[in-house]
Image (cartoon, rainbow, N blue to C red; front, side):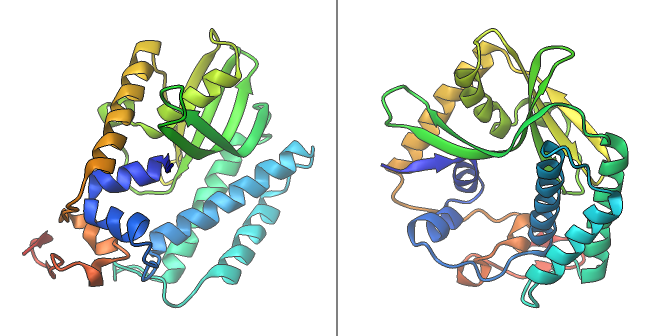
Length: 262
């Protein structure tokens, strides 16, 4: 039995062929993008920050930036892909420093009652173990002021989503299913995205009816994946960042002047 993840489901929706390369053929990624690397190191730095906070040891901003810098130097590889040639590795490194500085100054002294960091969750979508999901919550907190549980997620992308996109986002809503099973049913749950490039947080809440609809839609998506035999490619601007583009027969060079695929 396959245990799915939000990333696995999203990959299929974005490009079935990429799904096949990654999850069926299990092909190694050709290169990590600099954006993915930036996100990884930033997440690790915030995970370290809150791990220390839970020990009642609040790091200084200097200690946080030092941790980030050391992890960047330790894990950076020359093969990491930079698609946007107008930016350098240093530019991306400095973005991460800015993300962490702004986040630290906005949220210190980090007294929001964080319960767990990188919490692994597992969801049994239909109750008989046939359709299961797993994932990791960046940070789970219990807001004591309004007795509300909070599922926090960090985003390092430059683009800011519309309200409609946030209200239809599946990842944290799926994670909330697992949290609802761990706490009393009548407890409120807030879904919180931290868009670090904009230094803002966006909050959403879902009704029981919305969660049930998402549960059923996810089961149907898994059924679709498991019945698929032909995995077609889907060309979008995101192909520039795909770690399998050299293997894709549909991949074509982008028209630099128009920014579209030929």
